[in-house]
Length: 245
Ligand SMILES: CC(C)(COP(=O)(O)OP(=O)(O)OC[C@H]1O[C@@H](n2cnc3c(N)ncnc32)[C@H](O)[C@@H]1OP(=O)(O)O)[C@@H](O)C(=O)NCCC(=O)NCCS
Image (cartoon, rainbow, N blue to C red):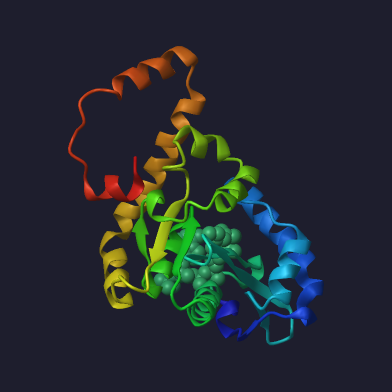
């Protein structure tokens, strides 16, 4: 493929990159629409603030064409750091760029906030794979920051109603976390992902179906479903724990 010949430069963004904020925002919105998935909306001004603060990385191809972006957010007074807004320009996808960007933003996060837990939310298997290679593991939402400002960011996502209907315990996104004080080695999380990726893929599909179902059903059948699920609790599997289904 032609992209395999590309080489990229990935740098910590600064004021010299402010002019790229609009194209980054536009691509984020267009990609979310194309995938039919939810996304927390970002403004060009917000992206620019991340650039000015040294809390983002930006990628260009060898001809200086913008190729990708990702930024850092801090929550819970710095207890948590999120690597958010990962985007690769469509023409540069499937050439390992997202992996390289995530590695760079993870290193920047660890250097800037060495004691913070690093987390991310994703609806995609590609990002789950990349995160696994960095040492992240899947967790339930209860292990993420409870900072109200973080969850308020989900309000602009099309799936916000699902998140709230689940008392903020579950939604379309899968949560993954790296805890500097208590974590597996990247080799271990990578191996775990490789051994279970087919199951993860099925679970992502199942989760989408399960979470959307109440919103597609008539009110009467919804009540039936709710009554049925309030019976005696069954033993929970490992994946039940991960996905809080
Ligand atoms: C998701 C996205 C960032 C991936 O970027 P990319 O540069 O194509 O990803 P990479 O080439 O680094 O691929 C990383 C791995 O994921 C795999 N992958 C990439 N896209 C994939 C897809 N759609 N489905 C499954 N696996 C995928 C690759 O094969 C690669 O695996 P490998 O190491 O075995 O080769 C890009 O498609 C994108 O910007 N999408 C829109 C925005 C988005 O979804 N952002 C994530 C929000 S959490």
